[in-house]
Image 1 (cartoon, helix red, strand yellow):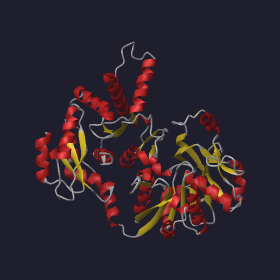
Image 2: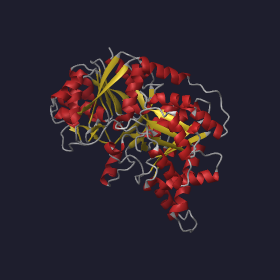
Image 3: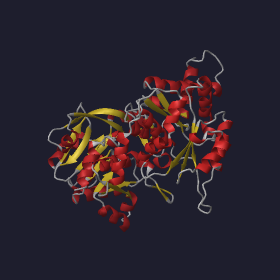
Image 4: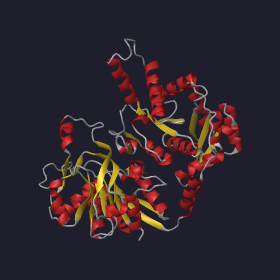
Length: 528
């Protein structure tokens, strides 16, 4: 089922294989007709993760990067829409030599070509492919067909794993294997027999349950991997290693490896388990709920980046989600929560909903000297707040919200105007990794300790440079500039314990072993 942990399982397997000295890459397959994840609503699909080469992908690509400590690209991501688009374009260009182009085999063959291309471009010994969705769904059957064809073509080089949920109904108090049995039967109907099963659930799988699954699913008991809930996703690799999963994979694939080295993972988990001093961080956003349930996937990389920095500083992160719409509505509970935190973070976003609440949160952070970190929209709205309440331009705004404002401190980037006129929305923002020059004698310079950095972007609007001189006279300075001096990349306030915001998305490059400097500085300031 969705959210059961396929992405973390894939990333953890990759981390374990890498710990054995293998070169590992990963591919995420999304079964959506969308060409990429960029046009999907975050509440519906979760975070859009941007790669170094500017691809808008599923959040699992971010998990792969964090666990593998490496950068992935467009070649590591595909969707149904992207695959069909390639097949159709190839047919239009006579790439099939006049043959009748059919869903099978031509679509699965395109999938296989993409997988092989990813393995080749990444120079990988092992490529992990995660097929999104749920087995038995109509929309991913062509990807399962591609997996079946690959196993037939390369029977000794391809393994199939199933991640399945092992429920313990509260009224029974007994772990049930039947859903997994049916999942395996459904996978069998697509022509695939799993080589191993990862059983996700609240509790470990006991031996009687493993024996039952082995009999009914045709899998050896040692290939049934118990994956109970853990306090941190970064404990999953250690659990898989304890269960012997990667030893089984290495044996089945006949791989020659070095002795496994899990010291870094053990040290990380020891730190996570033993930190006691809390640091309270408030994340102010509008994608924080769906119906009656809390939603965190929309800000997944931000959440992880805060954790990375806190753990590195030996602090226990206590993260509170604050709905910016409730701040707008002046709800006492939302304001009490905001006032209780030690650091305020406003992440990226789009549109009008909740914007005034974010501006109120930024104003509170600035005026009450609460450490503040703004990301993308969080930087843009920080300049709007400063313009309104320090420069006293009451109508100052971003033209994304108010095109008629007399003080458009945030405006549409020049290259975006024609695209917006033509409604060219998909994959057309400023995307991917760009250089940024860090100005001397700034907080940014102290944090990065580099003259030039590279960071990932995802935006259409930018700070209007005609206003920069007036901002800097009043204490908000541009501490990061693009090499051509046209784009403001970072803004900070001098007379403040910690007030810095970036047009780029630093959360996309944070890992548990290498926290991002902006987050590390933010958490450190919030901890003092």
